[in-house]
Length: 126
Image (cartoon, rainbow, N blue to C red; front, top):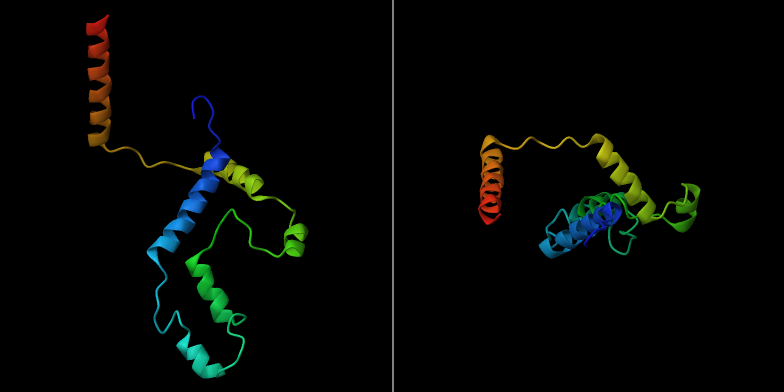
């Protein structure tokens, strides 16, 4: 990385890592995820993919914030921002609104000790 670092790419990478984590953890297979009740209600040979419960469940499995799964005509209607542009917008939002939790006293002491040790070592080597 050296001197350069792209925060928008970091946001994209985070989203991809989250999607990979979801896939690696697997998808639960049970009566709810198989929509057994919906199948019993509607019977065989119906379009289960277009059923509302399928959409609702799929949103719980993977709901990317940056990547866009809209159809092209809807994407164009909504302003045509690509994933990188949306990632840049997300970076701006994070930088404006994120309030990191303060470090604990224990962590602050450890950091202070590391800095003190480094300064002492530097002074001894001068």
